[in-house]
Amino acid sequence: MSGSKRMPRLPKEAESLLDRWPAPEKGALEWETMAAATMERIRSGQSAPVGMDVLAAPLPPEPHEEQLEVAPLRDLTTSLEALELSQSVHAELREGHEATARSVAPHARTHHERFRGILWAGAIAAAAAGLALYVVVRSHAGSATPASSADLGLSPLPSSPVVEPATRVEVVVPSSGQADGLDFHVSGPIQKNERLVLEAQPSAVSPVPAPVPGKPSPGKLQAAVPSAPDAGVQAGPGRAPGTPGGVDRTDSLDHIPAP
Amino acid sequence: MSKESDRDLVESAKSGNAEAFGTLVRRYQRRVYRLALHLLRNAAEAEDVTQEAFVRAYGALGRFDGRSEPFTWIYRITVNLALNAIRSRKTARHAGTPDDPRIEATLVERRPGFADPARQTTDREMATALCAGIDSLSETLRTTLTLVAIDGMSHAEAGEVLGCPEGTVAWRVHEARKKLKEFLANRGHMVGSENEQ
Image 1 (cartoon, each protein chain N blue to C red):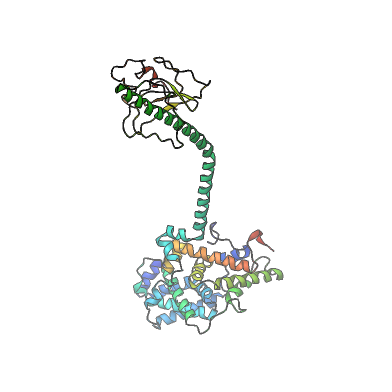
Image 2: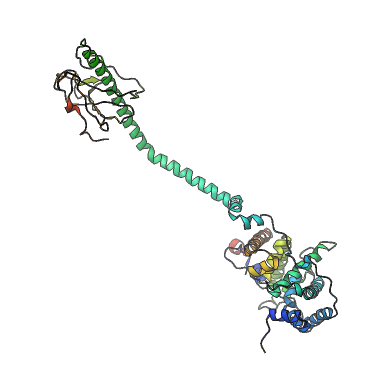
């Protein structure tokens, strides 16, 4: 019984002793004498009354014994082994988190930089759209002169570029322009919280040739809202495509793959 | 002639056949005595408790309901009587005294090589240390270890004697062995390659 693998092992001699502790030395006659004495007492009725203290379970439980039987898991959590296990698991998790962070960080940085670039481009596009809207409104009023964005003095955008049009804005950009060394071309309505797909390329040559009305330069900076049902640019009243302040549907960016 | 089972003997004794109970006495008195000796560490007290256990068992036969084996029932009575005797002692008995009957029993055993004086000294040292270690255990752990490790009872049988589940018996034996191992290690008796002097 003492040789269970999970039981703590004692020295070999101690295990041997426990396994077969020698029985007390008594001769057969001694044992028989002892048995005869017992039976004599029984026959003579010399027996003390048998109380429950003799028949009941004899021993009190050890400390922690009750928890072991009733709630072994709770007991496990309070044991030293469980504490070590818990610490080990936490260490593993911590290591895992650090390893994950180490492996993800370069990608995260790359994506962050890319996203910042897109935001910048989006902000530029939004600013251009605002200017274009202004031009459209002015031209509707009959007092505006079509002008390119460059002519309107488009300046670099603020450092916190957040594209958040409060309402639906229809953008009509009659021509391309240049901002912060980038050629741009904007087309399509922009709605709040809609996905803005942009593609920006730095100008190869500076200065950029002046845009030709009705023939937009190849779009370097383009914006579109593909998910919008009415994606594209709506023409202003009385304006023909290709005319200043009008619509150029070739600027639709439906063909540009999403990043 | 076939050997009567313990239950048959008990039923026979219940119906007034005292000799049937005598057969049970002769069948189990050695084991009961050895158990009492290991618990009490005194031969005379062990004899008294052994005799008293059988007398009490006979007197309580009407209350034996047959849910356990007769010998585990007699063992339970023995354990209770031995513990009562220990608690009623005026002074505590110290382990490892020269007249400790457990140690004497190990020294009279006839084993190959036992006549070797060096071997005898080693055995005595180990027996003394082991007895001291067992006596340092709590009453509950010591009794459980005695039933399982020394008497050779299964956990289920020991559970019947002690009135607790098998799992509790296993836990107690594990705890007892763990403490015993520490006790022996502190006395220079390590396991295997840890010293093996």
